[in-house]
Image (cartoon, rainbow, N blue to C red):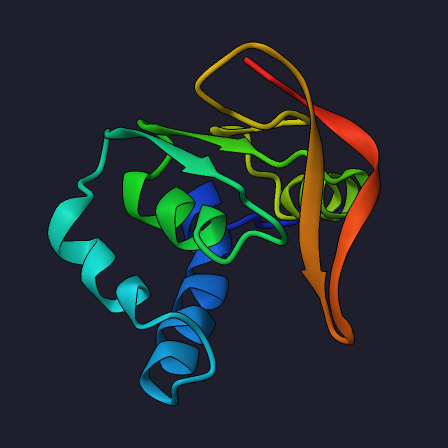
Length: 129
């Protein structure tokens, strides 16, 4: 039988965390990522509202570690699927990805998003809770 060593969950996310920090320094990603370390501690429970592809989800997951949790909300199906797949690949169990939007009132509302060639409304309505 072959033994396979697996890094602890937060260690598997660390490379993604470091890439996002570098991208922030190079102004390729939001500079706010650099300040997360001052606000988030191991064991914290945090929310990523409008998670998209996980620009904040991955760094947050690294910072809270397996003793904390990240609750990501993404209403667009394509982004939601990609994020769930990436987290499954990284064996991240302390992150939940919810196919939903959050808003002031419950119900379904039109969702507009920005795409490379401009602004267009999404075909489906997003549910808020």
